[in-house]
Image: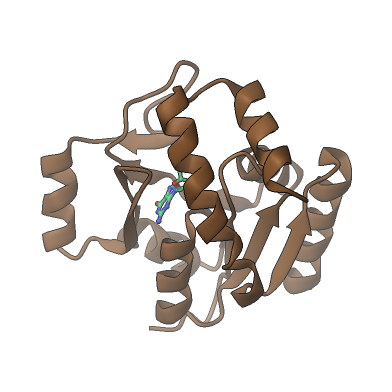
Amino acid sequence: MEYATGRLFVLSGPAGAGKGTLRKKLVAAMPDIDFSVSCTTRSIRPGETNGVDYYFIAKEDFAKLITENAFLEWAEVHGNYYGTRRDDVDACVGSGRDMLLEIDVQGSRQVKAAMPSAVRIFITVRSMDELENRLEDRGTETPDQMLLRLRNAAVEMRYAGECDHIIVNDDLEKSSQELVDLVKIYRR
Ligand code: 5GP
């Protein structure tokens, strides 16, 4: 179904490229855009809040939501399940508000198929070395998890060409402004 009103902006890109930080900066600069809080089966990390960063749910509950067709999109990413609740998106976009999704490339493709007017923005860095350095600095992953994310990054990078826009996040302030300006253009 295509919505007559609010628009979806979908941020994707490899782990460590800075999607999360750019997403927070965009919402801070444009508080009238709602961030879609995803459901996930992964464990909560220090500093995260249930219901704010994600809805942290059990695998059985996630599986039940799949059978109920509750997700606009869902995917297995780095060994955990993640999904966007359809009713959240419907309520937001249906009321005329724009919404921001920060999801992986598989999910981004599903959203585009369901809602062709969605704007897909790929956040990336110049090189795999840069990604590795950032993931190391972030320090939220175990060595095994980091390896998995780097392997997946190589596949995710190929998705950039399908997106409507690519932001190379070399400089956080510049990239953040670029993202805000981009969204402003669509909203004009
Ligand atoms: P993290 O575990 O680091 O928070 O997220 C891992 C990956 O899952 C990131 O690429 C993130 O964008 C993606 N992700 C987060 N929420 C969703 C979602 O609802 N659907 C999909 N398909 N991916 C998601």
